Length: 211
Image (cartoon, rainbow, N blue to C red; front, top):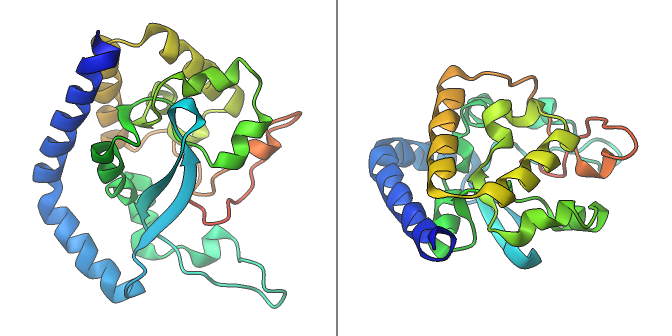
């Protein structure tokens, strides 16, 4: 019953409360990023959600598009702005994703939405993470955000799908708040790619550096 009706209500209530609470910050960031990036203040990327349905995720842009002499994107560390670094550490860059939740693309709680190319690399068991909507935060993020190895993230996503409930969502939300306030377990700002998950997990910069 919760998965069919209650979870959507949970999402809408939380998003409305967050938008009201964050409205002064949102206004400040929009004005500041418009000055910094002009019209291109929103980062967009195709992701997968429930049923492997493709959608466009929105985030605040945190980096300039800077290229080397071979026309390849420079590393994140050379492109991220000072404000962008703060936004990524604090996860404030994900505020526009709240509108993805309102649209029904995502949920507040669920497995993190990954780029569409990653689904071809997953095992049948790992693909079960798409039995529910992807989320802004999930069980894996309460344990360390981007510092958690991919193998652990996948197993935690599977566990979440099996035990999903209102109380588990509420607990994950509270734990996420604690992690964000403590800024704990953030080892770097470069996001590794799932493409390097097997056989070894090696960190690699994503095309835009957002995850």
